[in-house]
Length: 217
Image (tube, rainbow, N blue to C red):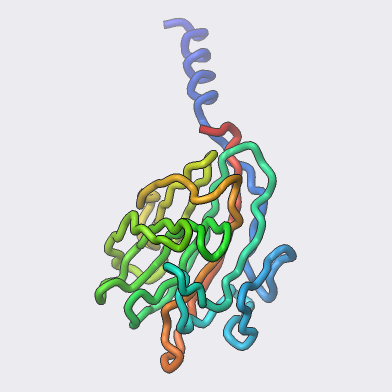
């Protein structure tokens, strides 16, 4: 075949490849970058170390109407017409039922979509769920064999898809997808709750990134 044929094939393949643009990143080393807001802040229960953000997982709940979880960390998403992917690395060792750390597409305490690392019936799990008007629906519960995991939410129009990648995995795994429970683009949040006030557990959070596709789906 002619050299031109191979050149055209290569160009076609390149045109199909999506590149991502980093719009925001925060490794949480020593401090939070400007733009973050705490909801029900307990200053004694979070810290930015030389390596990461650590949040103590206290009692309280964000799943359903109680809406009492402390130290909910929220920021606006960058303006973009493109699909956004938000990723973060989390690690914790829960012992209480539903004790969790989650990455959340967040409108308010009653409207959100979460994907998180959670203890469910004694099993460490990835849990994805949707909440609208405080009515909660579980989308996926997937067993997890490692305590350190990357979480990802992809927001494209009114759809959100959750992914996760354990420390030893090479590829992202899809947890589920759903429509967003609000109008417009949500904020992004980190939530840690359903812990114990007697047992001191700290969620370790690193490497948050917000990226935009070069071309939306």
